[in-house]
Amino acid sequence: MRIISGQYKGRRISAPKKLPVRPTTDMAKEALFNIINNQFYFDEISVLDLFSGTGNISYEFASRGTQDITCVDANFGCVKFINETSEGFNMGLKTVKSDVYKYLETAAKQYTIIFADPPYDFSTEHFSKIPELVFNNSLLEENGMLIIEHSKHTSLEHLPHFSFSKSYGGNMFSFFE
Image 1: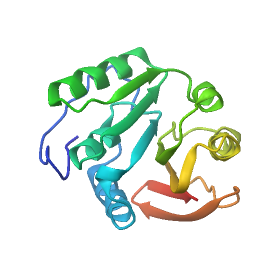
Image 2: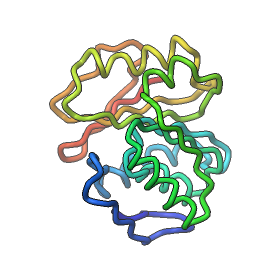
Image 3: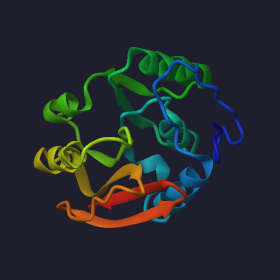
């Protein structure tokens, strides 16, 4: 995986093979950040990266100037890798080793963007719990956005607060506002 734009543009990051992850492809990530770039100033937002895995999305935000980024993942290896990479690039990412749903139930901070990249084989019930917890617990700032990455074979259009979706190859991003 590589960082597409910003201060660390072109840097390659190699995650250990043993991590249980599926990083967002460069093509899909570039398209996603083009959408975000048209709506937000990266240096003025706060980001919550759920199911962060390798930290791929968080590194992209940090490279573009976002200072307030929190990464949540239940896997110790993923959290350790994000901490090491963040430290190596001096990004200052905050990491939390936690079950994402438990974190969303107890989080006390609001974010401008919440990005979630759960396993593609999640049930609709597991996917629907993410926006439910985010909106019921008021975790988005006014005019904030929840983005869920999922397979193009999964539809989240029926969920409350759904705004639109974009498909890139086998990846789909659903936006909630």
